[in-house]
Length: 460
Ligand SMILES: *Cc1c(COP(=O)(O)O)cnc(C)c1O
Picture 1 (cartoon, rainbow, N blue to C red):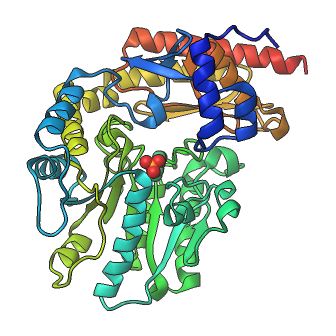
Picture 2 (picture 1 turned 90 degrees about the vertical axis):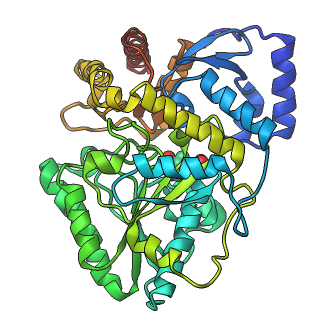
Picture 3 (picture 1 turned 180 degrees about the vertical axis):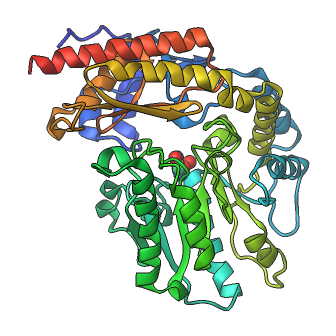
C-alpha cells in the first residue's frame, strides 16, 4: 500500500473528535477509528472537497439526492428567507403556513396522476413508517382489519426505522435489531442478472411478479394489506426490473385488492428520465414515498403522497388522525424543497435526464461493457450500474472475501471519483446538472479505476 498521506493538524483534530464521539450510520467503527473519517468541508456543482483540499467528482449526488448540484443560491436564499420570516411553526391542530401549502400544491402538479394529497416527514424512513401506519389505518377504516400483512422484496431498501427496516429486504439489516417485525414478509426481486440464469428477461419478469400472486394466495388475500416496492431497487444493487414486471404487478394488486405503495425515494424527481419512476416504468401506485431529491438533500424532508383510493377515505374520516411529527412540513425545509422543484422545472432537469443528458450518460456507461472485468452495465436516465465479475460469460462473481467492489471504490476515492460499491456492483447516480464534459471525466475515471482493480486482482 502507498505511504500514509500527511494530514493537516486541523484534519487530525476533526478526525479525533469524530472517532471519539460520533456514532456513524452504516460504519464499522473499529475500522473507522484506525483510518480516520474523510472530512468533507465544501461542495460546488458536481464536486465535493475534503479538508485536505482534494477534489472529488460526486458520481452519487451525495446519497442519490443532490439533483440540482451543490451550492445553488436559489435554495440557500429560499431557506434564509424562511429562517428569517418563520423559522418554525407546526402544522398540528388545524394550522398551516404558506411554505407547506405551496409545496403541497406543487407536488400535486408533478407527482403521478391521482397522487394529490401529501403528508410530510423528515426522512425517507419516517415516510415509509408513516406509510405503514396509513396502510393499517386505511384497512381499519374500511372495516377489513384482518388485511394487515405487508409484502416487500428481497434486497429492498426502505430505510432504517423499525417498520422501514422490516420492509427492507437486505438481510444484514435485520438480526442486530431482531427484525423484521411480525406481519412483514418478503418475496424474490426481479434481479435478472443475479438470478435469471438462462431465462429470458421477459419470462423472468413475469415469474418474479407472479411470486407476489403466489404469496398473496398463500397468505389469503383477505390478510394482505399492501405490496411495497421501489420502481428500480437502489441500495440493493440497482435492480432494473424486466419490461414485463410492473404491468403484471399492477394487475395482481388490483385483482386481490392489495394496496401498492411505491417507494420513490431514489427514483423520484427526474432520476429515471421522468418525474417519477412510476411514470417511467408504468406503475399505478395507490401511494408513494418521496425524500432525497425532494429537496436535493439541502434540507431533511420527505413526503408520502396519497392517491384517491386512500386519500378519499382519510380525508372523509370524522376522527382525528393520531400521527404527525413536530417538524412535519417544517417551513424552512418546505421553502427549500419548493425552490428545488422550481429550479428543476426552470432548468428542465427532468427533460434533460429523459433526453440528451440521460442519453449521453447511458452511452458512456454502455461503453464500459467492453472491459474484461465488466459483466454488464445497465441504467436508465441518470442512474447506472457496472457489474464487476470473474467471468463475463457465465456471470460468475469473485469470491466475496476478495472485496473487489470495495477495493474498486477505494481506487475511486484515491483518484477523485465517488462511485458506490454494492457488493461488486458499482453504482452511479450523479447530480442531474452534470455536463457532458463532466460525464467524460466521470467515465474516464471510472474506467481508469476498473483498470486498476483488474491489475490488482490479477496479481493476487
Ligand atoms: C434512502 C432511502 C430510504 C430512506 O431514507 P432516509 O432519509 O435515509 O431515511 C427509503 N427508501 C429508499 C428507496 C431509499 O433509497
